[in-house]
Length: 206
Image (tube, rainbow, N blue to C red):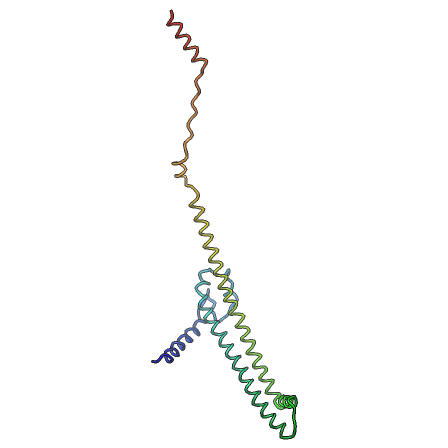
């Protein structure tokens, strides 16, 4: 198997895998259901939203690209059709004499009005589908930023809580490092001590 064949084989398996991502559920809601609750971070646990985010981006991103390719194909087809019809109409107009560009374009519209209306409707619908998928995909990308902010907030809160607990001294530490207040001892009565000394001196002199 050469590189091109291997690429095609892997791409085919990846495409099949992405198609199956629509069956992934978040609280019983499948991605393919495109329920607005899937975008509400507060509707379920943060862990559940984190787990679903990569699958959702792959699934909706693939659908968005499919819609974009279909729209591009319709526009290219429309352009080729117009060029072919313009050449055909120009030849018909010139066969009858001189004709300006405005004459040719007016004749083209007149002769193909129903086909033009049908092509306009098909292209308009394809544009609406792409716009819808584009908005939905961008919403999921924004949800990814919101998830990151919620995670950072949780991490910061936990870090602040841990710091506060480690900075607060425990009762055991307080007991070991806080000096105990000593009981106040009564001060000696100086006048009484002086009287006792004088009395002892008198007795010794007798």
